[in-house]
Length: 238
Image 1 (cartoon, one colour):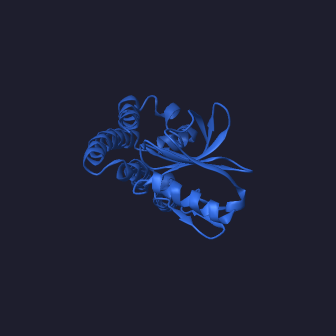
Image 2 (image 1 turned 180 degrees about the horizontal axis):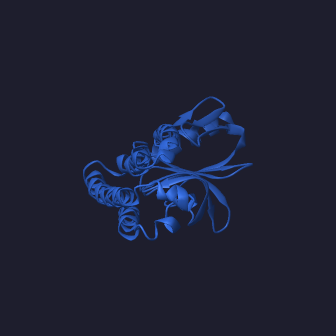
Image 3 (image 1 turned 45 degrees about the vertical axis):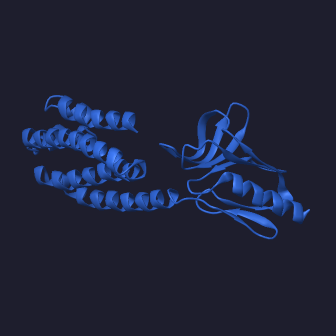
């Protein structure tokens, strides 16, 4: 988390320091597509000064607020902040930049679109961070939450408790934020579904007759107890 925070904040600050009126045409998207005639209508010095102040402030504020959130509120809140704060800030910048050139007035629509996208991302992020649970039914077990699934007992080959999951090479479909990992991941030997929101010392490994094996560990769920309950249900089912 700290590494990501320093990199993102550093990028914003570097943008603010590097961009000048002489190189803006090469570096700034939209501005670099304007003709010389259109650029002459822009108050370039004030616009670039505004841009530089904005990105330097964005970088510094992202760093300071991010550090406070990490140490005071934790990684879950930080994941919301680092995703949504820059998007909302850039939407505000896009809207405010229209006063420097009439051609930027369409930016207010871009700002509204960006705010809408930010809201959608926030909702998806909130839902994805909900804790998954395991529910045991008569003929199936259900892993609730995002990337959860219903597994018929007849399709369960083996349920065991392991100390760790296979070494992950890269994410195939899902997300990883700090110690929260949910989705399909590629390992050195095969694909696995990993649903974990804590640095656990144990994982439930569910092997199915068909499909991707599941490694499950959630805060507040005692894996040992869950294992015994599932195994007992399998015995009575068989």
